[in-house]
Length: 324
Image 1 (spheres, rainbow, N blue to C red):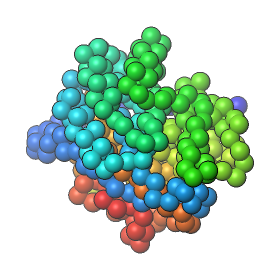
Image 2 (cartoon, rainbow, N blue to C red):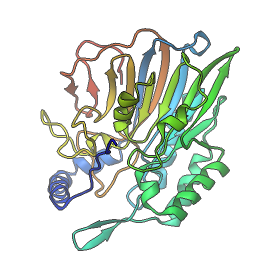
Image 3 (cartoon, helix red, strand yellow):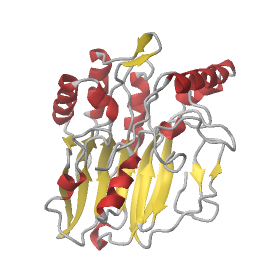
């Protein structure tokens, strides 16, 4: 049986992040970046996109991490940025809250009802003609079963449909595009097969998965998924010039740190996320919400020699698909 690799916050990684965070705060730049929210605009070409969905605009928000480190005003700003673009559909890819994490001799974070309610009230303002959809992230599960169920219920009340190992057909002019969603990849309940059940062969599929490492399951199952939308990595949160992120919770190193990645014809888009974890710092890695515009066309193979710009965004040297 395939074993999914988890990346817990070890003592070594904690000390590494803490030292880097302290250095960033000393210069004040890291803290300012944590409040510097960007609207990332990205064009994505899919070979099997139905003609009726040409130009489909998808608002993407991930990793809100409602907590004392993520003020309600920042969440509101992210919602406003997405709504100002009048998206056809909105997707949220998990980590709505921050779970309690034991680090060294103390416990950091934990579910706080006040922050949770602030988050849900802001999310309830999201509206789109084709709907608003969500999947859960690792922190949503790690907060405990009762909190997980409360998040699902709260999202439902906010008008958001939570996809738990299932698919939903989006329809336009008699044509369908399938939106799939799975539980967090690190959870035993993650079931890509369940999400694919009943989806007709040959149809265009966009998968919502909090963790981009789900690409490993896609590869093993040899199921054609056209696009994966994820978060989870925070773009590294702290990114060093020429070196990238010292710590990434991914089995693939820097590959899925942030931005658009091509695996053959399958495209994976990883947002840096709206919130943050552990320290109120982002270095060369500003928070973002994304507007994704889909076009019919051949998926481009991106150069691995990507540049890290001043905002931490990954831009291919030759490929114009990823823009900011």
